[in-house]
Each structure stands twice: as structure tokens, then as C-alpha cells.
Length: 178
Image 1: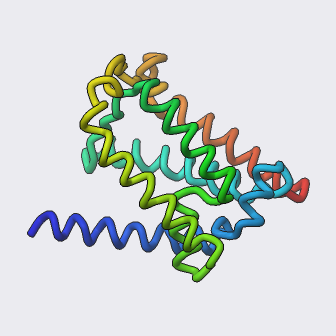
Image 2: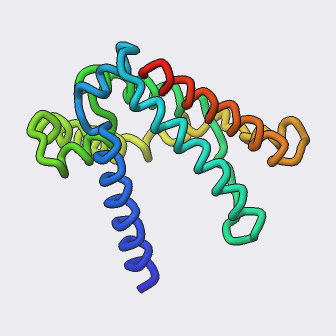
């Protein structure tokens, strides 16, 4: 029963996320390509806003013992190929996985066929080869410290100034018409 509730929470969160992506305009192919060409900064503004909200929210909830902050370990053998595959898919299609789902939900045919094909192909290859190559992929894993852990400072001493800089940058982007 608990797994069904967890799945429903995930589905609900995904629907809200897709709705917000659509409302923010980043399910539009032209907006995404405009970001890549440095002509439209809608995507950057949404990402930077999410960073501030997420950073403040996660640490606030962690401080209140509502959640436990557990950064995942890192691995260049996972990150580099994953980044390359993501980049190639984004360059070929003009969508990332989240925006593909939002665009499909919006009824965009240009995302439907190639987007689903890419998602299913990637999922198939991951499922088919992960177990066979997991030892190779999972080698050289390193612990990832958060920036406050690395600098040995209270997290709010970084969050507040960093959030301020990001917000000022967003205001500046708006003021110059981006």
C-alpha cells in the first residue's frame, strides 16, 4: 500500500512539474532552441529561480528535521556518458526529458514520436546493459560534499548571499529585456 501512495505522490508531483514547465513556456521548442542560441533566457530564469527556491526549501526543511539531506555519491564514469547522451538528445530534438513530457502532454506532435522513441530507447539500453556493466560504471565513485560542508561553514552563510546574487541577476536580466 505504501508503494502505491508513493507512486501516486510521484505522479502528482510530475503532473504539477509538467504544468509549471508548460506555464513557464519551456515546453516550446523555439524557447529551448532560443536558450541554446543565447537569444531567449526563459529557461535560464526558470532554472535559476528553481535553484533559489530549492536551496532555501531543502535546507529549511532539513533544519526543521522534516527531511534528511543525503547527497548522492558522484562518478565521472556515470556523469560524462550521461551528459553526452543528454546533450546529443537535446541537440537533435530540442527537448530535454522533462520538457518532452510537458510537450507531449500539451499535444505537440514534434515531441511525441521522437521524444517517446528516445525515452524508450534510452530506457531499453539502460535496462539491457546496466547489470552487465554496473561494476565498470560504478568504479571510482566519490563522496560528494555540499558546498557548506566543503567550506566548513553554516549553510545559511552561503545560501543567503548566493540567493541574493541570483535574484539580482534575474532582476538585471529582466531589466535589459531578456
